[in-house]
Image (cartoon, rainbow, N blue to C red; front, side, top):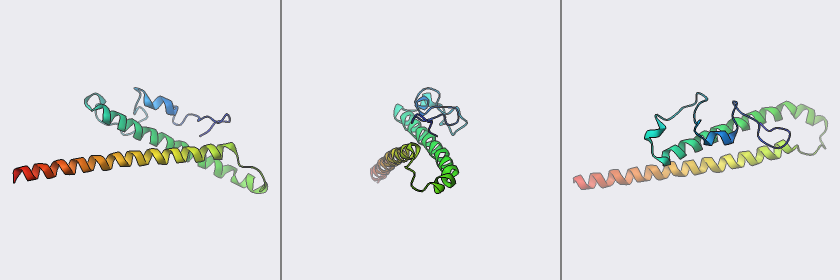
Length: 125
């Protein structure tokens, strides 16, 4: 959700920036087991996924706000677009780019695993 100043308001009580710190997963979300045992790559990966979830929540809240005000805006069809709609479009584009990045990383991890298993099976033969 966006506040009147163009900045993001809290979603689930946290700012997006807070999710990059050590408080990962305190909202009852799926938390990977023991972050201390994971590689830094995986910790960063799960933080990126959490940021995407946070952005999606912000998008949902913004869309519901836009839907609520839609009837009022129909009365003034020549009214300019609200700044929150522009900010929402930017957030949606940014989130889509982040999701594509995570998808690319998952595909790369799958290819690496396939190569490793193929190499292991060839070594056994």
